[in-house]
Image 1: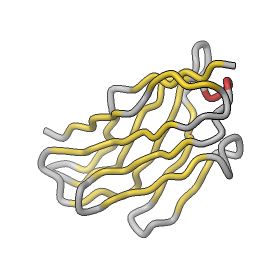
Image 2: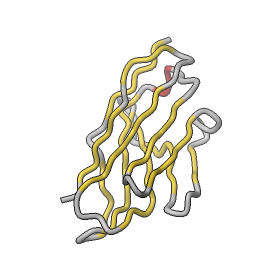
Image 3: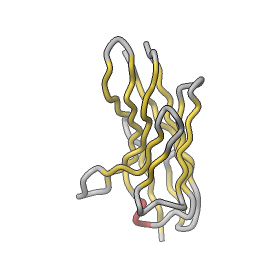
Image 4: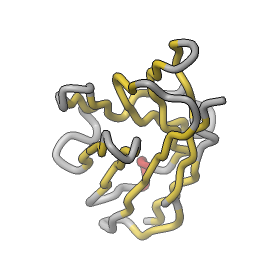
Length: 118
């Protein structure tokens, strides 16, 4: 059974920083794309950033220049460094990954709340 566990959410003032981490465990042969999504109240879940197995990254326009995604293949972890946070970044953040295990499918973390106060 594959599981993704997130950590690092919390409450921060506007302009501050937070670092989210996601760790994958279980029977995993490889992890392709790793990503972070977020969902604010009343809004659809949206892609924040993702990183491929080769290290290529992609970011939502709203976070470019402020957020950085990174991964550690050996540890099966990936992080989202969030700087210069804004109130509009407030959301539940979910990690996601395409994992090759006994089956190949997308997995989601349980979500972690990020709240940015003005």
